[in-house]
Length: 91
Image (cartoon, rainbow, N blue to C red):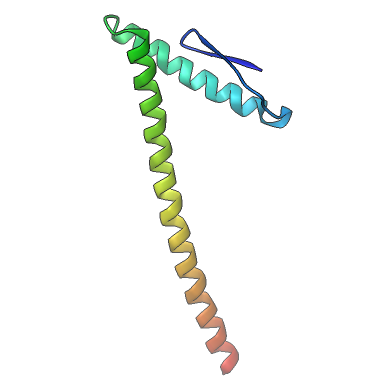
């Protein structure tokens, strides 16, 4: 499949069941590119594409951090619940 972000066409190999997700990502990145292109007309397309890449990388890193924190909290909660259940069975 081919996607288009900021006039740059990219050939991708994507499983059929993931194509909607890829199209959504393409649309989000291209919409941001077009918005920022009109907001900063003096910047080059390359600069705008770099800004878009940074924005999405920043989003990804924030989500990764949140996921890791949630995993730590889930493990701590699981451990507490396991101890409670063990104490309950001991009674």
